[in-house]
Length: 250
Length: 321
Image (cartoon, rainbow over all chains, first blue to last red; front, side, top):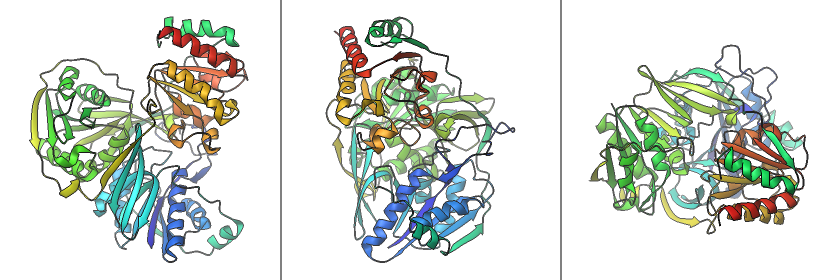
């Protein structure tokens, strides 16, 4: 099986967000960057599919700055065979531009499966996977928490409000991975050493500016300071009174 | 200038989030055309006129009995191309997050996704999107033609603003079966459980619950809210396998904005706070008075949750008679 996985370098979820002096972007000083957590599920799924098939290739693609080579190395350490960095100083704010760059690169090869994380935890766009699928004319299933593949037939489960949708689709296809799809492996020392020798190709790209423009990045409004109503079960009566009369939510 | 508001239905019944979509669409000024893909007439669709829809169009095809990702995307993109709308508005629901990018790509644009505010600034459309799980707000000027937006659920409170709501039904052609990707079945969640993304009240539990079985005290409290409440969970307890990932609130789970969020036995890690800080009212119950959760809570109760929560359940039951 030939499998492509598209990944992203994002600030760690424990990051305290500081706005840069331009008022439009994140101050990256001191920020720890990691492989987007949802992409780990996509990589793990690709590795398992390849292992099950007994042959094939798992290639990872990343649009990002030079420092994203490190992110690709993480994927290689997990077991991916090779990586491609589509190098651009800035990831476009318009996800359609990011999708165009990835689709142009992926289009040169026929893949059985193209995997994405269901979203990146920095920009929350939740759409680059399905955008790429549309650009490539491939079927797409998003937010998949269970996946079965037999030959060229896929069955996926995706969570919706109040239930699970069971979806049939043909391969080749684009699938975006949700948490719960699998348990991603940690790169072992052997994998980390091996990753250093795996091919990592760097290709400069020039994404378009697109049709979204940042006007400002601001901290969220501070929540008004709350109060401790009291201690123990004895405080519950007062809590309920406040929720009814002051907050008016009961 | 007309805005296309994309409604949602399931099993032939309009989903409530559709009212939020129409409400947001009419805030852009101009007229609002509401559209829904369905197999036949949708129960409740005639109500959207009340919230500001000038027209309600039902795009019908037998394949739309269930969500047909490719068929719906094609039908909506065709409609959008014919109608020359300035803006398309979707809900950022499970379906909307899947559908909006497909339609947008067919129109040659991206989606300004999961927005919490919108304004027409002169000729330009400016939207607000929480990023970094709500640790910052990104204001974005959308110059795409058309602009495609999706709305975070529970943020745009439906406002009644009656318009004509003239109904129109259009039978549409789509590929056999609705496309290559087909929904075979929907496995319903256990009866009476509500999704955390949609609930008006969320009661979330963390490590302080001590063991999975103890979540029953939160489930009882949720039941006392008579169908309005869902039980959520912190990342720690989901990673430990105590609760399903579908219930996780936080940066790698769901970002929620209920009217009332009750955090029980949750210390308040930054990635959790990011997922629930836009809740309208936050209550924290924790034995550690220095827990960070109290910094974002409107009301805190310090002490043993196993004494406090059952007492709260009793009080809420009294209110709901």
